[in-house]
Length: 436
Ligand SMILES: Cc1cc2nc3c(=O)[nH]c(=O)nc-3n(C[C@H](O)[C@H](O)[C@H](O)COP(=O)(O)OP(=O)(O)OC[C@H]3O[C@@H](n4cnc5c(N)ncnc54)[C@H](O)[C@@H]3O)c2cc1C
Image 1 (cartoon, protein in one colour):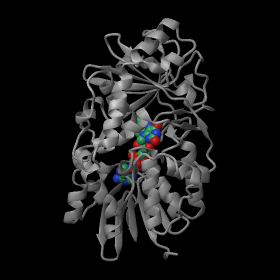
Image 2: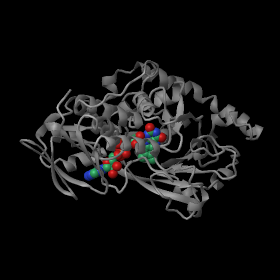
Image 3: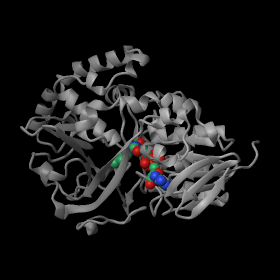
C-alpha cells in the first residue's frame, strides 16, 4: 500500500468527483470547485440545479430534467459502467435515433420509419431519404477502419466530412457529442472525431440513462468519499498552483494550502492559467489547450417540430441551416416521461432561434473543451507524463470527450497514486471500446 498523502483535486466535474471517490479511501483528499455546486457539465434540473426560466413550473420536480449530460453508451463506456455498478446507480435502456432537418424543408429521418404515430407518407419518405445515406456511411466506416492512426492525428474533421447530408449529419452529431459550435466542427481533430463518430454511426449501440437523473451518481460518490474524510470545498475557485521543493501550494479563495500532489480536473483551457511556474515541457504540452463557452436550454416547446409536421419526434433532432446548426434532444424518454405525452421536454443547444422564450424551463451555461489538432497532438504526451512534478491531469478531454473519458482518466490517475481500482467485469471488458 502507498503511504497516505495529502492530495488536492481542482475541479468537481465527473473526472474530479470520480478521482475524489477513488482516492479518498487511501489518501487525505481536498476537492476544490469553483462553482457553488458540484457536477461541472452534469446539471440536472430538479437534481443539483433549480430551474431559472419562465416555464419553470412546467415539469414535475420528482422527474428531473437533464440540462447537461444525458445518456451513456454502455458497450463502450467500460469504466462508467463499472463505477455505476459500484455506486448502485440504476441504469435503464433508452432507444436512440436521430433526424436531420434543413431549412429548405428537406429532412433525413430514418428514425421516423419506426414511429407508429407518424403518418405513413412521412414514414415512406423517411425510408426513401434514409437509403441513399447507407453507402456513404459504409464508405466512412471502411475508410475509418483502414486509416493509419499516425496520419489521423494530423488531420481535422474537414478532411473526413462527406459532401451532402451525411457530412451535415456528422457535424451536427459532433455539436451534440462535444458541444462544439457547429461553425467550428470542421476543425475538430479527426483523431477524436473519426473513431467516436464511426462507432456512433456504424456499430450496434446500447444507450442507457441514469434513473433519477445524472446528478444521482455524483451525490452517491461524494457521500462515500466524505465517509472516508474527503473535504469538499465548493465556491472555492483556485487561482494559482505552485510546485515547491516539498510539495504543492494551492492559492484559492480560502487562502494558501499545502498538499503533496494535485489532480487538475478542470476544463483544459484552465490548466495553463493555473500553473504559476510551468517548466518548458509543460508550456509545450499544455500551451495549446483552450475552452469555449456555450449554453443549453431546457424547454417545453413543441411548436418548432409541430410546424415541420413531426408528430412523434426521434430522440434527438438535428437542425442545420447555412453556417449554423444545433440539436434538440427529446427528454421525455431519458427523464422518465411518456414520449407520447402532450408536453414534450427538450434539451437544446445552438437552436435558440427556434424556441419560444416563454417555454424555457432552464438555461445553463457550460465551459467545454476546444478540440483542435494542435491541442490534441499533446494528449498522449500529457498522459505519458502524468505525475510530472506531482501534477496529475484528468478530464473527459483526455479520452472520448464524454463520461467514459472523464471516469477512465480519473481511474488511471487514482490507480497510479495507489487509490482504489475500479472492478471491470469480464462482460464489459470484452465489449467494443471507444478510445478513452
Ligand atoms: C451540454 C453537454 C452535454 C453532454 N452530454 C453528454 C452525454 O450525454 N453523455 C456523455 O457521456 N457526455 C456528455 N457530455 C460530455 C461531458 O463533458 C463529460 O461527460 C463530462 O461530464 C465532463 O467532465 P469533466 O470532469 O472532464 O469536465 P467538467 O464537467 O467541465 O468539470 C470541470 C470542473 O472544473 C471546475 N473548475 C474549472 N476551473 C476551476 C478552478 N480554477 N478552480 C476550481 N474549479 C474549477 C469547473 O467549474 C467544473 O466543475 C456533455 C457535455 C455537455 C457540455
